[in-house]
Length: 253
Image (cartoon, rainbow, N blue to C red; front, side):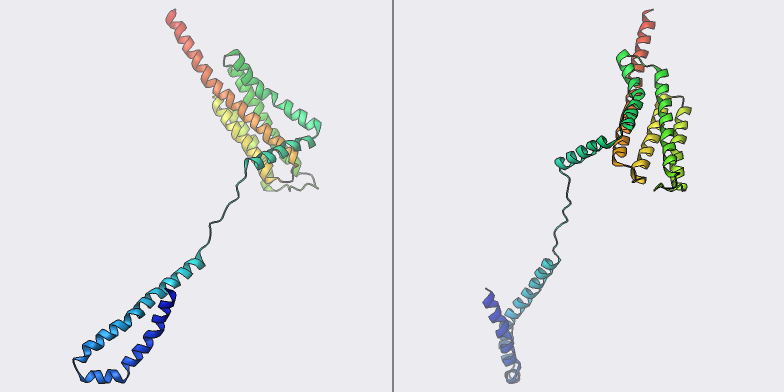
């Protein structure tokens, strides 16, 4: 097929030259010869049209091949890689000093004890819930003050600028706002926001903290937030049951 196209493309210019030369002048004298001349030109011009129609197609194919690019492949983390990273992060807790580790875990006991006590007794105690929120407010204020203590020394990598000082003040302000709510649920939500902001500051804005401290902060914040969520869930569930029991007792009496 390809040699046939080459022959047609090479042979047509010579035929057109022969016809457009002296033969064209001779044929112009006879009016009847114009029809034969037109037919011969159409026959000879057909390969040219086919060759010209084939030429852009080849150009388009080359352009498409030139501009063809494969989609970028983003490397996704496999479950094995994510498990390996989590395992390394947990292993970094071994480098944590023992007093810091034990005191941090001991500080989480009041958070966990409140929902656990209400769940075992099966009754919602508003005094315990408020005590949990108050203890969480003290913890958020401690985390903000710890940022000040990290930025104030002369040899500290964190400068005592407006950003670090203001970020250390935001968690105590939110914690104070959490104590002003009459509803424990609203106070717990505000407290969770303060703890989340403090965790964001310690992990992303202060990268010079040791790895074991960052892992300890993540674990501690997760335990505190889950404990507050458990208290809020128990409040909604146990208060509903207690109100139903009161209605039943009033109807029976």
